Length: 306
Image (cartoon, rainbow, N blue to C red; front, side, top):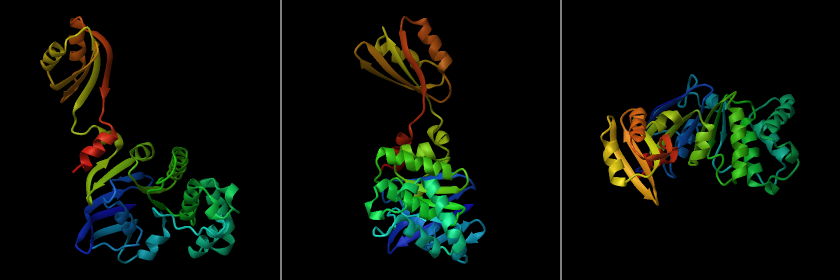
């Protein structure tokens, strides 16, 4: 559906996007993650035709951005980070204006406005001035405008930026519902939002892609196997020494919390059976035993820190 190869963008001497390549398949919800200034917005602006790249190829379906820009714009709904709304217009009037600008047939404008109003849950504010709406409702209106014309692809730049937790959940549910029928690519730096919404994550840092995959696959990291346990009636030095003897165990970290030892065990494959057998053979009291994966936040920090 979307294919990007070697995408590069300079602003003067500044390299904003550096040889980015990725694909978005039909029906996927893909999150483009990265810290501020990573190149997310520039990438999305190129995909939507608002900017041309300095180098590289972009294909949307069978269209390329150099020769079929208008065709591409007709199949994409775009919501920029700063939602382009006219505060003095009524919501209905604004959506009608956008529908006309998208050249929707006159007879089809009203049914189309009703359709997007239902999806974005804005029927109760259709005759209110946009300037009187909350941030959450303004974002819904912007999303409704992007959906006018029933585009096949939806591209959203920071759609939950500045929203409160309840508003974020509401927008998230709308995006997930839209994603059942459309291809969605959206940028964010809210990790929990991406993890809860996306089928796949693309992490970008300093204009380069540093990770691309499903959340669970990214969490596997380098394939390290991690187990956390809590022990009582055990000595720190003895625990570390005995566990380190186990096959496939590479590292043991032990912290004391009063009478309880909190132990993290790292290895190159599953060592749980051997670890449990060791604990049973000792006088240690096992309080907790859990396999752990890296959190998305830990992965993000590892990939985007200086």
